[in-house]
Image (cartoon, rainbow, N blue to C red; front, side, top):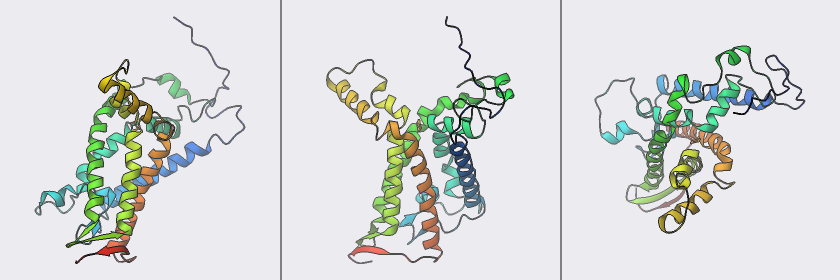
Length: 267
Ligand code: FES
């Protein structure tokens, strides 16, 4: 067994020899995550109107898939909405994401805040238990991936649905917003480490037939544009959920007009 190597980190929370702005990124990320969580709580529990316009042609990404509308149910408690029913799936997927673990370990637990920066003494006492004890639920990530793929299909269905109006075709800013959100989410899901394992990483070798195809898929998912940029896709896809929600809410309550770019056929 190898011996643990003691690195010459200066002891004491936040103490370090680093001279760069190591606190900036985790600090901004913490603010962003708290702000998005507060906004989501406000939207779900307080302000859950104006979630679609044009009679459900365009639906807010936070409330999609709008399972209550799709089910045809009309008799349900006034406090209930589709986001309350389905958001635990994207929350579970993002909350157990390997990149997200890095973010919350740094931003919320200071464990450590950055490389070569010391962590609080309590963290040293508790120790790192990885995916055991409190964080055992992180093992569910691969299962949340299947749910995220299903949600992704609904998102693209939303885009196609938004292009139909009456017996005609419409392309408006709402469709472009939904398509952008779906594209970013597609990049986030297909750059996931568990997805990489699913498409080819689970195999020992890729030689011949289906396995060589899976090898090529593995290389594609591992590329700089996908897996190596997973953090970029995490933030852009997350941010655009809220851009989309604000846009749909603003059109639905009349703050900004609905702007069609192409309209073919009758309404
Ligand atoms: Fe981030 Fe799977 S590792 S979504």
